[in-house]
Length: 381
View 1: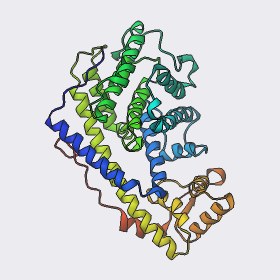
View 2: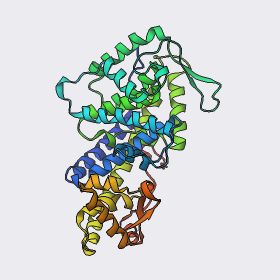
View 3: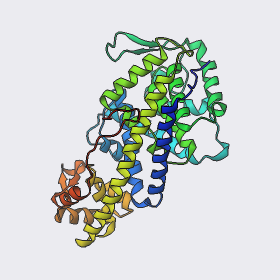
View 4: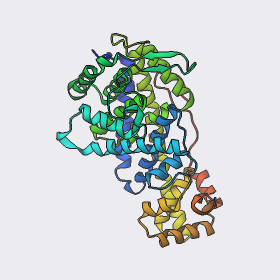
């Protein structure tokens, strides 16, 4: 028996409808904007990877993850953190690819174990990709010496995973994707089927459910970035403890978990919609400004990340704009000469940030920092 999908009340239904409205708006805006949405999608994926790994204590910058995604060495992350990020990135890349797997796709234990192996391969002593053969505990965020949750006996795990796989393929198929993704997340994290990596795999499974929907790139629907932020992480642990109980208890009320997830999805959708609107206007403004300075429009592939305060690396710009090494170097040099970019660091550690010429664009385009609206009635963070 798994934790059961709760009945939604009127407030939940309204939140879901509003999230769907924002997702529809996003689909409308991103489809004709292929030039820059590739960069936004990479940034959102990097933010999800950072968020999910931060929850587990592996902190890294978004720029370091983006560098890894482009095949470059991170500037700041330690070797241990880099290995964690690389594993999670591999799993996320495959999850995103599965969005167009078509009718032949089925959830199965081999797929789920395979994703876990990608995430945990470097922890060979923890049986990556294989179900645990002993007890497992989740420590309290308030006191690491206290077990906040004890997973079901390992003898129960194979049957629980068979039940979860069956549900993923056949269960609650009429429920909205946000509901199914949230329940997949809850059940996997409570089964805790592996010796380690259960939290990240549960969040990755939620993203996979969205990927299979194939209506919007999954990185626009993932709440991993939101979960990785300070108080949100604490709230995440708290609601998992409240709903899941101290031991495997699938008869408990899952409504608080669903409301927590729906609120997170609404706030994440607000943020994604704001980013798309902001970057759409920024691309236009930067293209016009670059043309006025006799820069090719391709240079906006470097200017746009600098606009959103990301580090620009020559090799990443070269890939985004599909240039040769020499072309990318010349472009970067010219953007620095004109004050659009400013160099930082030395040699292989060199990167670029927004220069003084960017300031008028920042002031003209950046929208106000109005607070996000909490869908359940109070101001959000």
